[in-house]
Length: 337
View 1 (cartoon, rainbow, N blue to C red):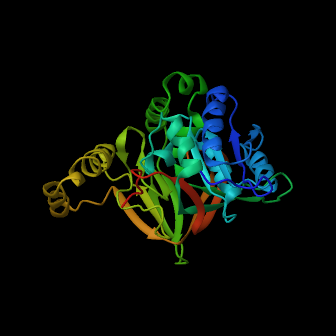
View 2 (cartoon, helix red, strand yellow):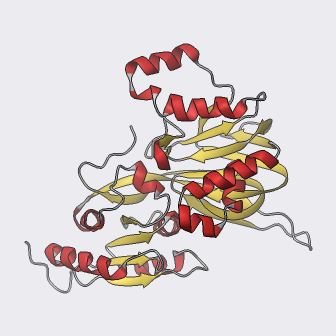
View 3 (cartoon, rainbow, N blue to C red):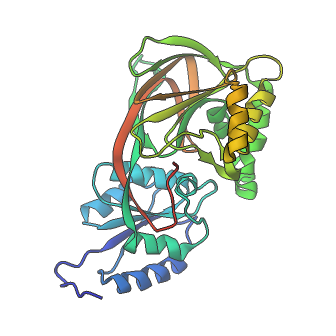
């Protein structure tokens, strides 16, 4: 091991969600790895509920962290990534949540804490894209309209997915994890009408569309092995926009056939891909690629970013920020191809 002068020793930072992290176990793993790497003592920052971890990540950056570990669920990882955007400081992912969406999409083991820490200290740097979304809020009583911008790593959406996340019962989520969204999704599907939106891609004129939901994806794998967006790549400088459209009384059967059977099963074999090419049924599920997007609705609708409720919006617009985040990866982990 090469000795590093104390004056130039780098240090890591751990930004952690206190209710989702086994802090004692993580500290042991980090101490062992930092000693092998010859780094100075790691600094620890607890997230606060008010900002999901952005404040803690800013402090870690300001104090000169050489790598920032994010320990928590998708919301914590998203907030830290938003703060690290464009800084050049790599993110080490310690997945501790229900969905662990980014970890799944880079082929990272979800329950191997030692590997997660190993990657942060010894892994390779991998630039990935970030999705950006500006959320335009409904006007307040004084007629003032507020806007706020956020980043997302995996998937943002308006429609059924955002309504589902907004109505998911927290007690059920704690007990059942990701399956809680199924419960809320069924209840939302039964009572809610489709959504009328106006949309634009890459600056095109706004067009009307009736949908169950519109989702903007940076990568496409969801829990349970559901491949929502089969061609999405996290480092191609593009966003993949998917719309689920209500066409006929059996729309949801067609949509599940497309996402569950076609994307999840048929695409894995050459014969299956030939069947997809022959059928070529894209009426209920459509895909677009774009660098910029805009969506508008007549009445306020919920917005979700990486599985978190981000309140109500009357309009959203955004773009991809290519290579804006650096993550640490080990050999054997793999980005979507």
